Image (cartoon, rainbow, N blue to C red; front, side):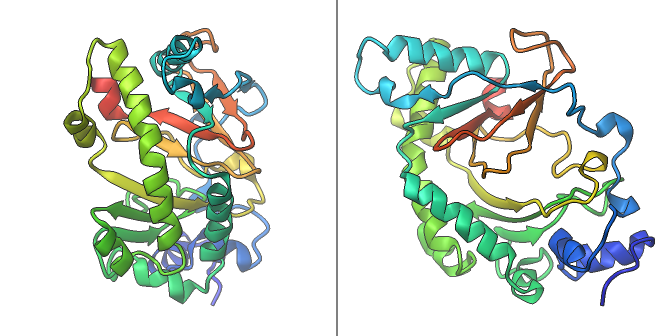
Length: 286
């Protein structure tokens, strides 16, 4: 039964507790964003004045060995880490066919019937390391986020194969294995700039906690009124993000840099075959 869109409690029950998600809300035929999702003006993104990020992606293959381009690429990474905290990389070692398969599998998972996804709601999930939901803390958020997600914490392959969703677990494990080498390279370059020569044990500690998530942003009738993900920072060292062709990733500048002034928004458009790297809180604290 569709919710009463004018009643926040009805929307909350339908989307959050019953596990229909924002996709279920959209599928019910709404034509405007419910009040529960309308963000305060100060939290919305100034898309009209956003700066388009136009630097070419960094070619990580040039870090291999000690060729003439190694130092320049390392400097590009360090500059991006120290300023905006976001950058794009290509030739990253993750098979391109795998990236395309991940996009397809994400759309497939979120198109499943609500009852198939709802088995991973926090209160009933077979594992505390697997969670399906919408806004990260919907019980406390003044305005809900326009997204659905499936979040998985990795401990070992056996547990992942036992508890992660059948439809996506094999691909996600393959992605995890193929992307780890890239993250190690980025850490070696970043820490090396600080005068640290990390050994394997240090690297293992820094990337010891691995989280994987797939996030789905349903079509929105009033996209200027709401957000998929509100302002936040990521824990850990690096977040590796695969965008689809729709895009919609904006970064707010926290201090004046060569990219723009404090408070400006930057649009990071999707680039074919590229991954987006975001510096996390743990790395910033080092």
